[in-house]
Image 1 (cartoon, helix red, strand yellow):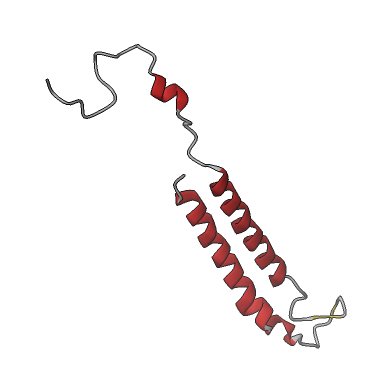
Image 2 (image 1 turned 30 degrees about the vertical axis):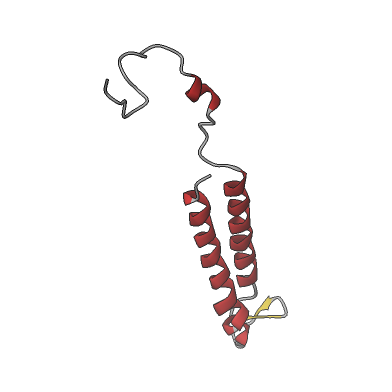
Length: 99
């Protein structure tokens, strides 16, 4: 008598298997969706932190003779892109995480 190495064989072709009907076939679980939402929140917060006036905007009006140094703030150049990249890394983790 030989040992079966896989679940599928010609003997049980067309028969209903109880293992497949009880097993949840959806890949993502609650943990995956939780991590996806956390990653999405990081990405959204990062893009919101990047927002602000452009280089020639002063008090909400365009002025070609002025220069706004706010475009070089730590928030817009360092923190916000770091949050976006961290959010994408969390998304990759959420997709690859097994149940």
